[in-house]
Image 1 (cartoon, rainbow, N blue to C red):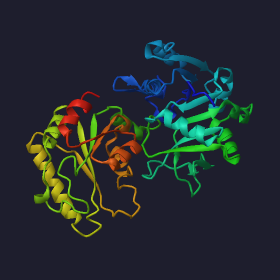
Image 2 (cartoon, rainbow, N blue to C red):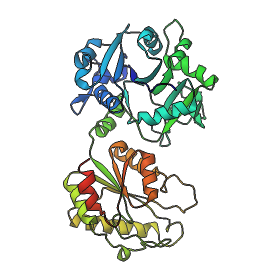
Image 3 (cartoon, helix red, strand yellow):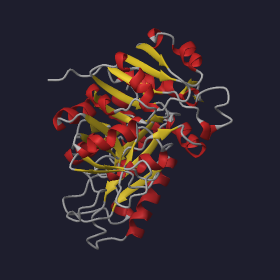
Image 4 (tube, one colour):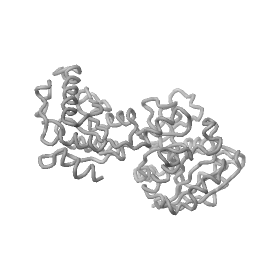
Length: 396
């Protein structure tokens, strides 16, 4: 069995021309967000995921990286450097650093951040038994133009030009590779992705790890406000509705109107405590009664309006409510245990699901939370919402 990699190789040598004038005097990975350079947020996450060795491949203003990080000791990692010519493309930078690269390595581009679970990435890589694996944003929201096509865990097409019509997904720069793939790099200056990825696709040796969690970037001016909001780290919690906030109706029955809504003990108190500590509060709820014709979306919106007004009157609040109106067997992506509503909230509010609690009341909620990367908790007869908020959420 291949040993779990300990090394991240980070490409951070580019000029950042799309971010002039911000990059006139510093490389784009050193642009600060909330008091820390962008790349520092990335290094901190790598450390938290058990990556202890970092190799920075530099070109533009390398001294600034070295002055900030040194040997990495004060950041809890060991950092080494390979500095090459300013005009070297990614392939040549990697080729020149070959002697410093481990037999299996984690390759990152320093202008993207994504809150990955390394254990999950590594597990799929081992299961697929391939020479390389890309992390791919599903891009169902058309966040940017797609450049890959993934089917059954394999990348079947990579198109850097993004011109092909059947692409679905964006390669986001968090790849696992065997060192043997470097044999595909020519001696001339080249891009790693255009030299290596097509060869691996041809050999069916390139896997794709799909994620619905949005990634964040310092690649262009339009992405900077979203990245600023994401890295602000506003604490957020996601709650199921029935069985967490209100008494759960019997099976195949529903809260059809506001007079049917009965707050559970500790629910309003839990919302107030979360608001006191500055949490953003999001509710997600399955409401198949709409598909069954038992009540309308207008009825549901009235219930939620009354629910939110009551919460505010009790010193709480709810920032947003997402609901699935589909029937049990419609095959949508939003009905729990599928995590679609959680990912929709993430995209619209720009928070980190891996740092977020999801509180539900049954196994479907656990499955949805785990699929989204959340930490999950359950309300039951002995643990109300305020109990869980007091003992678990506010204490981490």
